[in-house]
Image (cartoon, rainbow, N blue to C red; front, top):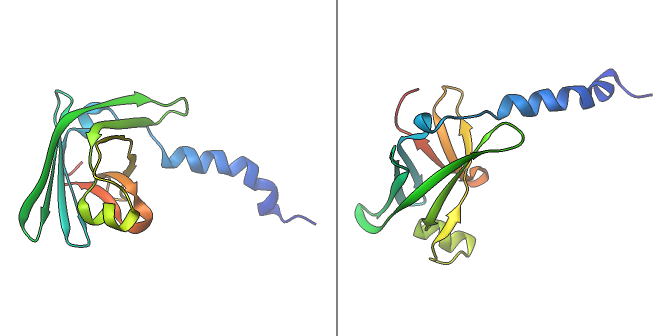
Amino acid sequence: MRSPLTRLTPLLLPALLTGCSEAVPDSDLVGSYAVNYRGDTATLSLRADHTYTHTVLVNGNKVEEQTSTWKTTQSKFGWTDIYLEKFVTAPTYRRNQGDKAEPLTWGPTIERTWLGKIELCFNSDVGCCYLSSVSP
């Protein structure tokens, strides 16, 4: 015999997934973000003109900086997708993941913390989320 929870799962799952995703206007994305990953400190500044600057510091010294463009689209599921053109991940993350230092189009996941701050995550499982430094 199936439990009541098992019977309700197909009904509850769409509601739970919808609650995790949302449309985020570009104006909410504009601002500064930062991540610390195994000694690398990276900042990402998204500007209203749809350009960004990504700066990486290792032991307090600037080792990389890119400037390019970003754009958003609305997915058919209702949430916002963001794309950063010519993005290069931080050196320690690249070494850990076996990535190359080649520019790519990066599409991080947009998430909100319990406090409402925006995170841009490229691997939330290992703690690689750029957290907005601006309060909502």
